[in-house]
Image (cartoon, rainbow over all chains, first blue to last red; front, side):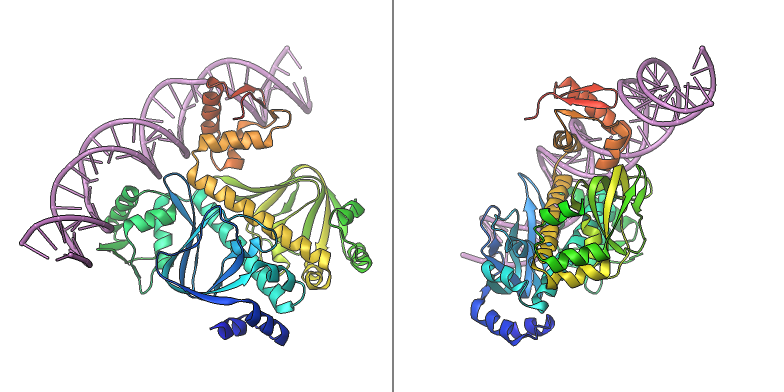
Length: 206
Length: 206
DNA sequence: TTAGTGTTGTGACAAAAGGCACAGGTATTT
DNA sequence: AAATACCTGTGCCTTTTGTCACAACACTAA
């Protein structure tokens, strides 16, 4: 699995491959495990080799999704922490059983100017995350929740189906369950989707 | 001015100093000039040496602030564009007469692995911008507009005074003028601030 | 001084989003 | 089968935010 990561990132430097092997370790986690908790010091860069992790911020009564980490995705916030000691402002929780590559922060900063492929990796990670977040931000600012909800469902659908409860959707979109239930009903009435038990079928995605 | 930038970034490499001098150029812009327009290809990295630029996204009827660029600040989105050819998704408009350092994108990517100080610069720029944006994002998600408005005023106040019209504030916070006017009145009634003509005095910032 | 433009205040109303309460459904475990 | 824990639907009401319309004031340029 580590070798998949190495090849996906085109890490051709033999020396970096060796350093990675020597310094990192791989851990596995069950559903509902916390990978990172708010206000906790970040000591390792986390890369999800396999599985799914939800990274979110919370306040008193609500949550909002920052991003999901899927196979071969890197936690940008822990990458950022590699360059300066800091605490996490988010929580990260396992949604599907995970295999995670852990690299202590002290290596990551160092490699950035030592290995070209690593430099490319960190830069791309920052760029993609930043662009993604700007999109999220302006959607949040401009789009009514109904549209954000529908777009979100379309983006998460696999074979036009989303298997999430209304409560889960509420958490991911930063709102409450009742609001989601009502908006979904409205969308169903407009023949945009069909509601089942913990399952939403998208009918019309234009 | 360029030398201030060089010293602020601790660019000690003589060679990079020379490259910067040879490849960049400095331009000046008047208030209300567009520096970058939505959907336009980005060809240079823009660094504001002196002045103030507002970078924002717009949709049909509204705008929302992404960030301000003040003295010695770098446009993160144009930095991002240096690593892959792409179009702007934002507008940037001069708010105070500006002196801008322009560096063609082809150099920036190259320097990233060639000069340590440049590498540090780009990494810090991405990190700071990403952290800032995450804060903005969760404020937008969690805080009622009234609180976002007050916090924003406090953050922009100089000697407890903000010299902006309600219309400007509306643009920066992604809402409309009437809404801002009413919220400001409410805050004034609660003795949080005092309203004048194009001027807001903060009375109580806890 | 006057015309024009930008700024502020506000009433009336509409739409969007949230909170509370409760009813009934589904799934799982014991 | 009973108990328990989620899950979904919805009525009712409140708060927040947005829209339209209009009036008054302030500032600037001719």
